[in-house]
Image (cartoon, rainbow, N blue to C red; front, side, top):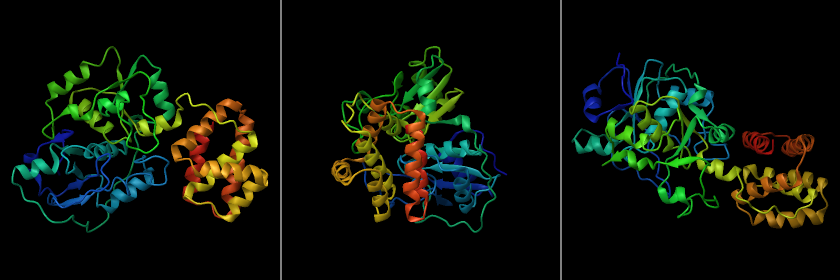
Length: 384
């Protein structure tokens, strides 16, 4: 059985071992940021299967893109790809190294360490004139992979705030220098520019040369230039994809205690308001607004939900706030909610009652679906 000893392998290594019985080759390509469409017309490495980060290996009901899937979801989807506990997995993408490191880190998080990234990806494979095929393979049977999460490898909003205030941790941001400094806007519509406090910028592209990772010595120097006395390293980016490239580079450079911030700047920039002035709402107007926001977890409000909201506030308040809500994007909604919570200084009991009202709203039509469940968990997190 093939056992992989390194987090990174060359195309020559893969070509040599392509017939290994337990080898699984995964194409983990996603479109790059700000590119709306990706045409898979470049061929595939033989034995490839598609590792669908966007739709199969992310929490598609989550509030932010590319969120960590549940253990159950990851296990089921990995088994569908024929992945077993003894599989030797090579992941690649057609950009060189872009999203393949995310797939690598996900496997490590869910307890599978016999996994590696293909250095240079499909472009390097083709550069060496190795064979490509026109489509992905379909597994002949389910695998027996069992997910065993190693929770220390990924952190959330609460965790990254703690790391931001710790002298023992350093947060690396993989976004471009201009996005990090706010010179250009974020590609996600409505998301404010900014940085996580006490973070440093190391664009993931700095780790690459002609689509391949730089040498171990060069990678180590890039990190050493930014590290002081810190021993824990947290990696962030826009949505948790290229943060994993920094985790890959740091692993190769020999660093330990590495953590990826799953929500990255999209979550942090959304859940922290940038000195925004709170709307001049009454508490009834705030209630109408947050209930409308919750009702739109499935991007629409039905008559049952509308009636529940009107029962909590008068019709004038409902119509006024409905007009305002209709003109706000998702980012503005969250910012207004956060600023209003801070302004009114709601007690824990007040928050419990608001969350109970939101839950009642969801049950108004007799069906508490997965999107509503996800919205309730999200609002619990930001309100409490």
